Length: 458
Image (tube, rainbow, N blue to C red):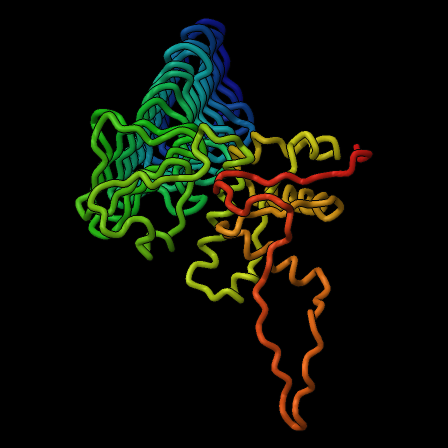
């Protein structure tokens, strides 16, 4: 192995070529270019750096390995790194220059690949898999981001200010890292192509904040893509040729799925769902809201963008409760647990819960946040005088009636005859009555309920 500790120059170019393995601590030029060739290349300590318009070119017949402290960086010059073996990346960055990276398996382990300003582009070609750790990202300013892989593509976070983003996988595309924020974000367009599916059900969907979407699934698997505040299909459309999988496009919790092009699946299993940011596999396996439709559908949703955050949140809870008790007996419905949140956000903030803002509920839907808000709301409701919560036609009527029946003493209107000796006592079932408030029981499904408080309560 050839080991290079430090090579530096002010304005000159640096050329270093070896037929064997090379290990580098620092190669730096203030304004010149760097060209490095080897079998396997290991960058430790600082790595490769140029200033001005200096470029960096690396060619290796083996693998590239970078330590956590090393980087490949330029100011205005381009970076080209081509390896026949695997690539393990810590940081590759340029202020304005373009970055091109090629290898077998390409892994972003630490920070990632970044072009901070200008129109510099990022292009990656992996003959096998493109892999990203959950804390890594690829970013540009106005330049494009293009990732091609013969195998799987993992997506943690890809972001450009205005540049287009394009992914093409010879296998499938999956997501890693946080599901709270979009994994792909740009004011430009997104193109997604794969052989064996894109993303997955639940939190594993591909979550994007983009201008327009074009996508193609060529062979098998499911496609699940959600917008953040709406999702627009480009004129070139979205298509899946999977024999069994579903193609599902979602708008996010606000906005709509809109289409300038066609959305289609060769097996007919395609859907466009507005008002949701994720779908569960069970809904598809049961054909829920999908069976009998050939192409795509836009189901009627409660809590669309024109509704307030609280209304949307309550509608989602009622929908979930309705699915939970569908087909069950009255007794099973009575034992189900479902509640609507009626506490104004200001009331929660006044009680030290300002961290749980309306935007957090609306955009993330985090189970932890929802649980904390429900606990706070129910605690306040428990300590306050309440009016009857739901109309008789509401799913929640079962809950309120059950609560009334359990919490108030039962008084028989007249003494009952004693049962005959040896015979069990028969008590006829009594219909459940909602708590009377003098108000009509017929209410709109989108109405939320109010919690009355004493006048002297803050």
